[in-house]
Length: 179
Image 1 (tube, rainbow, N blue to C red):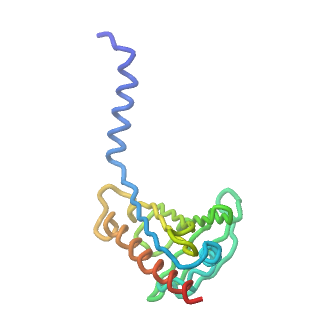
Image 2: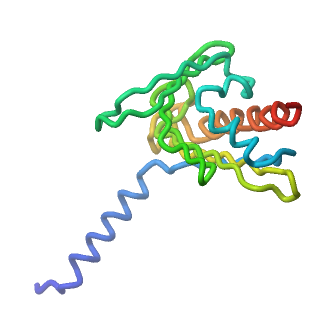
Image 3: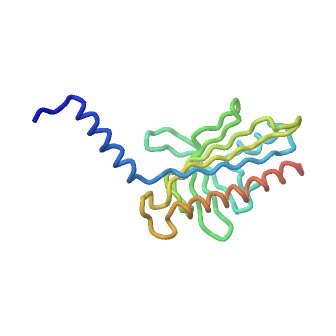
C-alpha cells in the first residue's frame, strides 16, 4: 500500500487534538468595580504589592521580600497570611505605572488552584473622576487534572477565586472612596 504525503500531517494533527481533549481546561474569572476616584489615586493603592491586607478583608497581614526565581531574576514576593488560617505566597511579575497594570502568580498556598496568574488593571471609569478596576485570574484546578477528586475540581477552583475577588473589589472601593 502506498501512503499519501498528506497522511502524516493529518495523523499528527489528529493525535494532537486527542491529547488536547484529555488535557485539563484553564479556568478564568473576571471581575470589575467602578470606584469614585481618579485612576492615579486608585492605582496608588492597587500597585502597592505589599499592602493588600489594607483593603482585602480576607488578608490578615502581608510580608514582602525580593527573591530570585529559578532563572536568577529577582522579583518581589508577598506572603499573605489569611484570616482564619492559611498562607499564600505570590510572585509579582509586572507592576507598570504606564499601563496601570499589576500581574502576579501564586507560587504556593491554600487556594485550590494550580498555575494561577492574575492581572489587575486600573483605567478611567465611565464618568469623570471615576476608575474601573479589572481583576482577571487564569488557573487550573488544584490537581491540574481532567478527572480530579472532589475539592480539587474546576468548580471548586472557580468558586474560590470568585469568592476572593467578590470580597476584595467591593472593599477596595470602600477603602478608596472614604479616603
